[in-house]
Length: 191
Image (tube, rainbow, N blue to C red; front, side, top):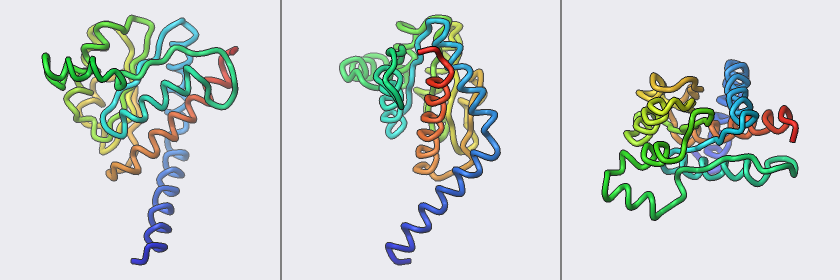
């Protein structure tokens, strides 16, 4: 396969997956957006977490809410649980890497908040523990998942499972869905 053929195949595959998600999951995405809106209208904070590329997506999305997405408006409370290297390394060292999200949720999240977990597999122990910590505190938790949803699927209040097994395509669609949700939030809230 030539580089141009590879590029065409990669983008065509991603476009087909996006079309599938749009066709089959628009109502699910709207429902998830409703959870964000309910949280923000009620004065709650949206907490984002994930590993690797999903950690980058967590930072990206928290920034969209705090700074702006498509228009200048008031800041919305959102925090990425992936950004404090001192906290992450201390927790990893002292309590184990599996606790890095759970510990922050225990300290920061309150009923009325929303924890949003990103995972391509739904099997990462620290994401599982994050969901468990949120549930233990009475905090709503949703997830954007792939590869069938894994263990996390059964631990959250609501989720969207991207119907794919390729990690890069799952992450690309999760970020696209998050942008759609952010757009719905901005269009719905009186900002």
